[in-house]
Image 1: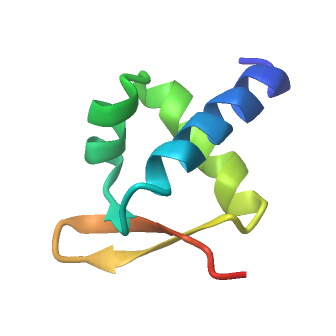
Image 2: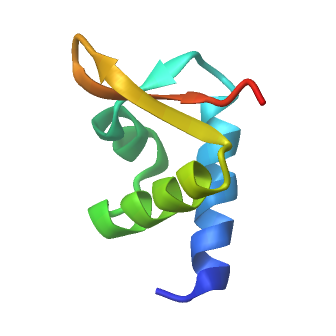
Image 3: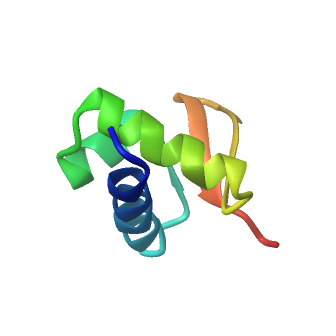
Length: 68
């Protein structure tokens, strides 16, 4: 997967996440219809850029938009 595609997918995930508070990978995958690799690569971009944070929650690992 090239960097441009990862960036485009990351922006799509950001758009989705602005509609709610926290998400699991499963929920994000349902909403975006991305494959596992596509979604994971998008999340890596967002976490690396400190736009998304991950933490342990009741459902497993959850993701929220960074406050910074």
